[in-house]
Length: 329
Image 1 (cartoon, one colour):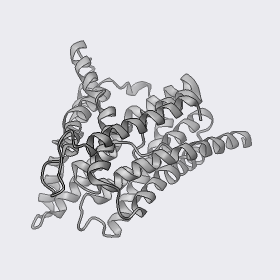
Image 2 (cartoon, helix red, strand yellow; image 1 turned 90 degrees about the vertical axis):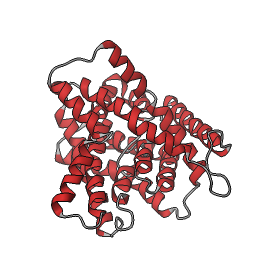
Image 3 (spheres, helix red, strand yellow; image 1 turned 180 degrees about the horizontal axis):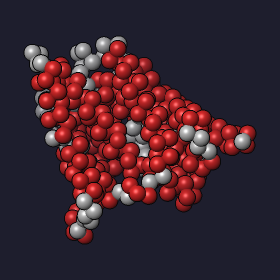
Image 4 (cartoon, one colour; image 1 turned 90 degrees about the horizontal axis):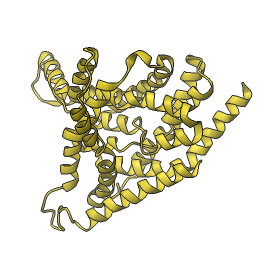
């Protein structure tokens, strides 16, 4: 692994540590020993979910060039990714995990599928694959949050609607559609798609405003991880966090490798780029999603930290496997 990636990982840990220190010192307030007081982590998470993330999603969707997309590579990545989401979601529903916590299946699905595509993914792609590989990475990433958040928002809102007692099937479907469309994630995506489809371009001032708001997502999410560690602590049972980290670091990239290579016939640099994209540690947006639905914040926080630490060891393994596969061909 290149030194650039190592420095990015180090910078991430330092930023998380700063967030933990701020939370530990209660500089932004928080619950005292008697459990009194507010929760600044939730307030900041809400700001990200209702302001900064929507700005990022709208700008990305409004500017993406769908005509020039390498759709074979995109499909080879998102087909197994969506399969992974549905597998984790389906298994958790089958196990009855959503009975007491309706949002739990979707929270675990996003933790096992949403990667750190920007803070770690961009320097990894640039350092290992060069400009051509980075171009492939950025192209796929432009749809990453849009696809995952939109699908899981639909699923979680449906589960929450079903959990409400006394609702008919029609009421459940109407509630699901209303809460899904009028949502801080889906609504800016839909608006961006309409804006894009009409062939409009963002005015320079508006584009600058959206860019400024969008750039706040990364540092805010990283400090939120540290603050969550300070406020919520580590989970007493580590099996859930370790399991989710394992799914993200091992199962997802293996699934992408098999489907993309032997299913879509992808090889060479495009294959390597999307496999390493799938092998990235858990992204911080998973924590914002968990905090939005107040479900398993400790577990998601722990899975994010564990997977980021373990990535130092798992990334060279996947790169070696990809190099071996290239030699065999």
